[in-house]
Image 1 (tube, rainbow, N blue to C red):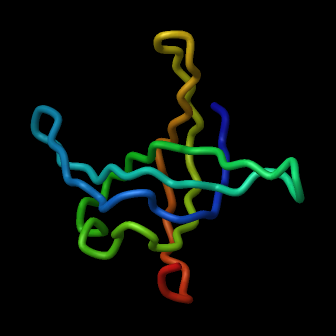
Image 2: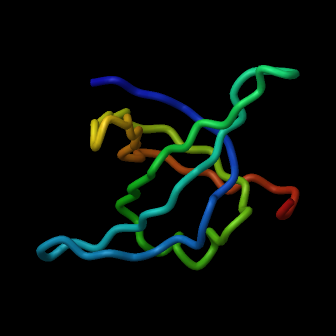
Length: 95
């Protein structure tokens, strides 16, 4: 298993989805990558088993996520996702 910890901002409001008999929260996080003129952004799709967090995660909310890193290819692009085992809301408000 590949574990990763990231901290960034939600790119959209969190959604609650259902798969068979389980509910879960899904959202995306933008994480700054690099410095100066080489600075970029990496995006991670996050799935979290506690759907109650959905009311607190809106676009721009700062979050820290730890969990299992997944990668998939689609139409020549690489998509990164995290199956979160731990999630923390970070203070400071929205940008």
